[in-house]
Image 1 (cartoon, rainbow, N blue to C red):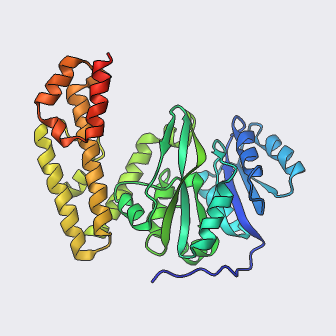
Image 2: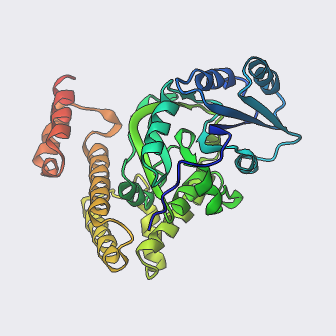
Image 3: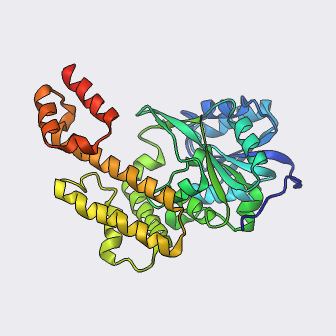
Length: 351
């Protein structure tokens, strides 16, 4: 049974904003101002510099001098993101923990909307939001909203935006949830997986965070290492379905995320067989909502099919009438949505 968390808790603030930073002078001021300009103002703001050697300290002190909500803390030497985040968790004096990164930007109403939702849904332990990436790319990301949909999504990867989350402090402490060095740089994914065992997860559909993508961010610099850690957690989620999968099957579950997995039409059959096995395995333990799991798997199949069509008929994003006719005659169009086929048509006749 999900525990109901009381609103009558003895916390000094409603929100503690936890922002770790290491040599983040380039974007830090913009991130700080987006927090200070929130429409909801009852918060403390923890900025923890992890042994920064640039202008991080000076920028932080400048804002702290004019706003008493800011607490600036400095590690004497670089300890890494995981240790810095755990240090921050130990310093929290509020009902909610709001995560924030030093290179992102909050929507002015982010805190207002998240605290309103959390106060009205005491069963929810962690609440993320949709977000807009900018910088290297410009994409809107809408993650699944309901707990069971999120849990099904966690079978394949993280589906909560870490710097967008609100977390209940008492929930985190009661269940001894902390960041683990051995899961870095997928430390947030591991937290969502553990939290899903004890409490409800939720994502607001509102885009309340601007997520900056650039070459120096941790997820960019450690892509291969992040994939390896993510794969380990994916296999942990696979065990929620069954512990009886063979090593070959476990490897296949990881390879599902390789872009070239389906390179020929015949590759779809084993992929469909794998989907059916996941569904049948879930019927035994019922750790996942059947409807949400099937929906997630269907969506993944659609993605694989669309990726294969692009590679087979419109490689290098080249669209013309000859390629369109070849695609239509192949019968592959019957497996793709009408909306997507119309996109192919319009692109092909406009070239």
